[in-house]
Length: 271
Ligand code: ADP
Ligand code: MG
Image (cartoon, rainbow, N blue to C red; front, side, top):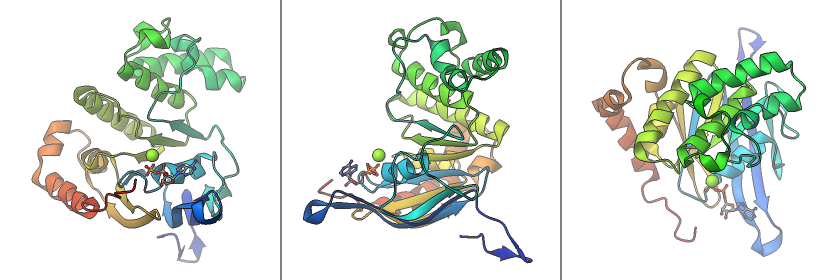
């Protein structure tokens, strides 16, 4: 959107959705899940997408991940049209999709191993991310031996081991208890600040979105549309402040309520 010519130079957005629509099925039974989505943002942004269930959040992310081809429109990353999944985009789902027969360490190192990376360098990266996510002491365990929160941390560590330029997360903390969830929000925030990667994060929690995002994108259902983009200052501004301190600030609460009021009443009775 803010990517027009500047002083004779065109700076392409890092991620760009142009008129992206997705229709599931055909004929009268078909569902227009996403209607003419236009959204672009820069490298290093942390974009949070919120909206009632069924508004097309997952659909939109699947087109960016390359798992789903839009019915019309284009999605591009760094000036190149998305035409399938790729290691430049890491994906974390709501339910961790781990390999149950592999240890924690083998799960984390799956991507680098598949790409035939230098094993020593890959092992160093696996260790770093397992330590960051508090899983190093569990490196020889199997997923079934981990709690739900630990499994989700492993899914995140595995995505980060690929060092994706773009991390796509679809309600990744939805199944976590409140305390673990806030810890994960802080950890993810720290990783984002340290690496400068670009994150697209879908959540049901407006509070989570306002805390984590540099921008909150609000969608409405049937058909799914982007209705508002709100710049949020807390991700970059209050980096060193405690998470509870940030979330208790009057300016944080005011912005959270503003986003909530946009979603209020949008809930689709048919969804
Ligand atoms: P959200 O992630 O915001 O909850 P989704 O993108 O999952 O929304 O779904 C948007 C709409 O598309 C919903 O009405 C949903 O029922 C429909 N939908 C999603 N996936 C499919 C599918 N594979 N086939 C048919 N309809 C689908
Ligand atoms: Mg969804």
